Length: 305
Ligand code: AMP
Ligand code: MG
Image 1 (cartoon, rainbow, N blue to C red):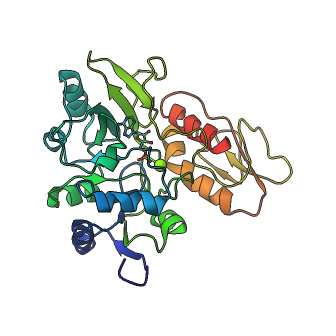
Image 2: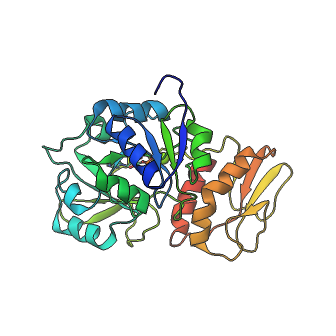
């Protein structure tokens, strides 16, 4: 921080991106747009910079970070890529798929990035601003969601400021994010099989849970709006702010036209709006548990926990 703890908000144009790159090079924190949610980025090869992410978020140190790279070539400096892992990266990168792979012994990254695990989570984001940053930097970016640990994820620069103003150097503002929920995370094991650790925008047809690999940060209570939240509501009860879906109209709606992609992109903005509303409680209509609806329901269950 440059003394006064002011967080600068910059438009994500060429000058804004250049300034963000300078801050990141010198070990600072910049909130950056991705196609999922805004990320809180720092250089992944610096122990000091990575420690600042954990401090700014109040994130428990056992919760590892996703390392963002320009593509497979850079990712292969840090992880062992089996043929199956390489095929997944080639099919879905750049995009909202995070691969958990064996960390290379010679990976020149801060130990805290992987929280002491023998594996590393890697993703090549599709957002043009994040791509432009990664292409001009000669290190990858550790970037969890740009919110205080446990709170609602940010899909706009305003959401970032609501949580982290004064705790980070800069927000690169590129408007609301498109996918709206965090990346799908899959672990690719030594035998080539794939296990989903977190549902997200990409559906691989694998279901998690059976074989015991854990995503350590996936705590039961997360995305907390700070008020009780009731699921599967058909109508608002007294004191409830209702988030609608489809035929269930609410104080706001995830999608009046039953569109799950639209619902995902609006989910966190709706939760932020509900959190700010005067109502003491929140209710949410039923969202079908298919496609990206699985990711929406995963986040809603944690918000309700
Ligand atoms: P966030 O960056 O807030 O979306 O959280 C990233 C999530 O990635 C963490 O909460 C973990 O669940 C998961 N993750 C990161 N690294 C690993 C890893 N090596 N093994 C399993 N899960 C991981
Ligand atoms: Mg998060």
